[in-house]
Amino acid sequence: MTFNITLDSLQKLHPSLYRYQNKEVLTRKFDSCYATLNKQMTVIEFYKVISFLVSAVEDGHTSCFLPREAIKYMLSDKIFPLQLRFINNQAYISCETKKFPFVTELISVDGEPIRKIKEKLFSYLPSDGKIETGKYWEMNNGDNPFFLLYYLIYGKKSSFNVSYKTNTRKIESIVINADNFKNLECFPKPVDIDKYLLLEYPQTNTAILTIKTFNEDLLKKTNEDLAKFLEASFQEINQKGIEMLIIDLRNNGGGQDNFGSLLYSYLTDKPFSYYASLESVSKKFTTADHSNLAMQKPNENNFKNTVLFLINGKSFSTTAEFCSIAKSNKRGKFIGEETGGGYYGNTSGERTTIVLPNSKIKINIPLDKYVMAVQKAKYKDRGIIPEYIIIPTIDDIIQNKDVQLNAALKLATRK
Image (cartoon, rainbow, N blue to C red; front, side, top):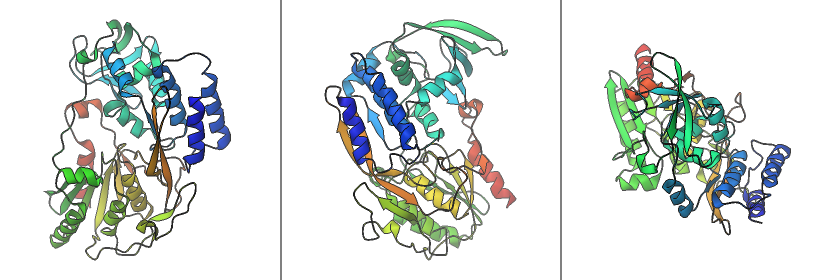
């Protein structure tokens, strides 16, 4: 049975299957998934079971994907006609639509409160531990947008009874019809990036170092070199006598392991540990296998003054690794939202892809367990939590206000 292939592959290949869930709890969840396989299913129905199982592992690098034909089928069918914007436990219509005014808050769909809908959809999205910020990002802007997730989990519907708040804060209801994808409203506009690395000086004695990716393949497309950029940037920052450095790592989904340790080498004047351990199910790696396991040296052109870090739910993988080291070593204050990647490490590196027979559903299983060399934190299953938690409101988003950066600039002024 294809379900058993999934389970067997996870148990044999995943090096930290029980990192966040103990074996007994996870086994119960697997059993509950198996119990639903008591009838013939479509590919989409079976994918729903598989995605719940994958989410239960609580590992953001473990993921599953529908075959292209199934996605085409979903997009050719009639769906919920709006892409919603979720903030905390609320959902908003973030554009002017045929039936709703700008920035309308939805209260429920078919009698189910938005909070409950969010919780249900989140149980089908992968994430490190109990982190939710990455799930918000996925549902708002990522590869698992609300309108597709809702179709996947709630099934096909011809219409929806929607309750919403009016401009006068009254609760009203309206029935809206399902519609084709081409008529979807409030679809997020793709962001074209022509530069991932940027150094700016927004105010006296303050510099902003923006790093939008650690992915070398993406950097090559824009003819950027992170090592050269950091070398030139920190030389210039130090020559200018900058007192406050803001490092913007928001929306940086990660990339090459060594880029995280390289960046931190510019922020310390002492040798530092980076990885505490790195292993697969069959091997414990040494310094000969990965340089991040060795004691790291500070860069001679390191920055010694105050640092502020900007992070959010898309700050993941290598980015979260760097942030955990900076946080553990008390190198600066963090502003924004909890990282999408775990504080103590992740499971990533090499991976294998399982293609299930018949359904052709793909499952990515990471093969390497990374443990960061960090001090103990309050939570074992969370990311890097900012000292200054700032979540943009729907008005901030609509008006394109960068309230997180503005907060960092205000803090910089006080220093």
